[in-house]
Length: 223
Image (cartoon, rainbow, N blue to C red):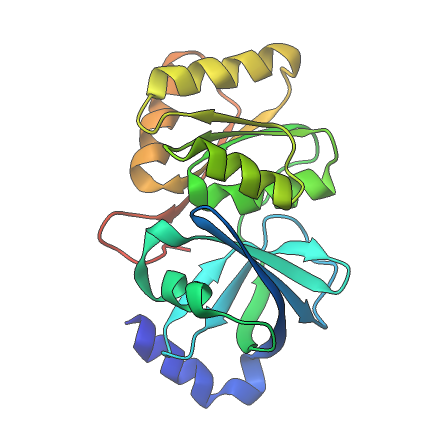
């Protein structure tokens, strides 16, 4: 289905597509950071872009605003066409895309953003827009990779919790809410994480929760 969609988008490229050029590529363990030059600037945190890959697959990423365009951060262990393209991207490559479009909207104020490796970029995007108001809790077995990638995109406040440790995740969120009780808790990433942590937080009495599922096992992106 993704390839069919990509072929349709390419066919009508004069209507929908914008273009960016890869300026730099840098690896941080399992992450790949791409800086892109584009005329598209000034979009809100939580937006999405849909990349039209050379394979005609389309993949969705959260862009982080930069002075000359945007930064993309990909988790290579996710596999699939997006990861393959990112691993081979080189400066000078041109990239057609659709967007930015609205994806995750959060009310003004502090945020505790919970997710997996695919959530680091959206946490960084909000952190850039709301300095000092965003704290991320990332579930991962690659703690050093997460911290290095987060630092590279300006995300300074981040806890890394072992994947699947829902109790530790709830503890980390409640610790942040103890100092910022009005913060919204944004749950992002894979469907199993979002549902499991949401239910556990509700049992713990947390109510100001917003969810955004980016992917589900056995399926391409959901956004």
